[in-house]
Amino acid sequence: MLLYPAIDILGGQAVRLAEGDYGASTVYDQDPLGAASRWVDAGADRLHVVDLDGAREGRPVNLDHLRRIAAGAGAGEPVPVQYGGGLRTIDAISDALDAGAARVILGTAAFADPRLLDDALDKHGPARVMVSVDARSGHVVTDGWTKATEKSVAEVITGVVERGVTQLLYTNVDRDGMLGGVAGDDVLAAAAATGAGQLIYSGGVGTLEDLALLAALDAPSLVGVIVGKALYEGRFSITDARRVLA
Image 1: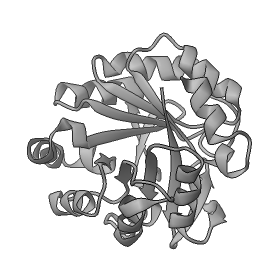
Image 2: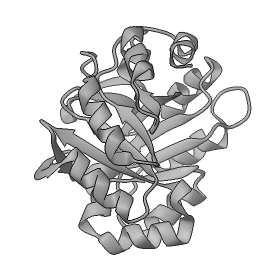
Image 3: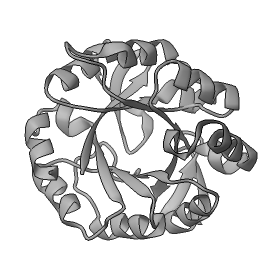
Image 4: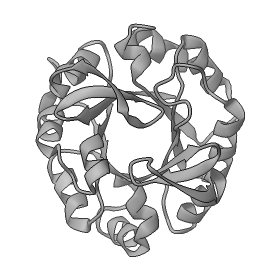
């Protein structure tokens, strides 16, 4: 299973939110490139970057930071970066890929504008277009986690998989940034709905035991986990996390 250190950008800084609350953000680095370089130098071989400003405004805001990170965080060679937040037009998607993203992450737009998802898959291919399914209390939320729906995670994942999506991200917003552990049953349900595709999980990882739990799940489609606050607060190292996940 792969480790994706998270870099969430808000107001030009690397932050973490608590349960998706923009009013409960903690700044961990004044420069997102500094955070990215720290993770890469510590052994990370891929990164997860979210434009929180873009998610709230409905358009990419931090493409310049993406360019800097994708061009070469750390002292070594550039690592793949997946990027999401505010990508609600085909031009915005193309701009993010042109800025250096290895793949883009669509959230609200994938559900609000079905044609956009189809166009993105046709133009860039399923390997470069990921759909993010974010949930509170088992129901999917959209618009930067600010609007609730009545749809379940499994229902939404099944729907986008049927449309050709192969790359999925599932975030448990109730647990995100709280370091309180993961709910294995929820992850298994999301992974089962993913079918032959690939799923990355995010939310609640606070210890190496949480990573071990995810790695031990009988879920072939679960291929990665995003970790943010636990790394920023030194709960464990990149090296130890990768060892446990391997």
